[in-house]
Amino acid sequence: MTPAVKVLEKAGVTFSLAEYDHDPRSPAYGEEAARALGLSPEAVFKTLLARLDDGRLVMAMVPVSAQLDLKALARAAGGRKASLADPAEAERATGYVVGGISPLGQKKRLPAFLDAGAERLATLHVSGGRRGLEICLAPHDLARLTGARHAALARR
Image (tube, rainbow, N blue to C red):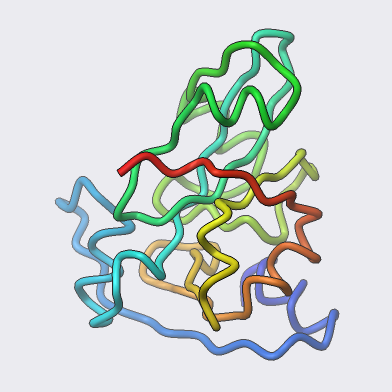
């Protein structure tokens, strides 16, 4: 059981888990999860960490079918610029490995932003805290548990 799953169980949130065999050669973890589980890439969200120009670290969740708009993230977080965090920094801040970074159960609670498109979905999938494990839950539960604010972050 991962810290992400423990958070959900403790909160009493309705969720389900889906597992797949992760291919270590796969360069795109989110797309791999969508393909392996037969899910729409618009409903599988990746968790990305970014560093703002003022030094703050923030978390963004966007569909794997899109790219994170760093300018939009900076604006939403009250900064001017943002850049993706170094993978090692992301792993230290979250306690998860890249490709398995869940927005839930991280070592440090970061300011969180969820792409506004999530509001149109009944459920979405996020990493369960390790490669090959996905959590399916309602977007409003994800936003509540992470303290995420909605913002237009996806660039297609």
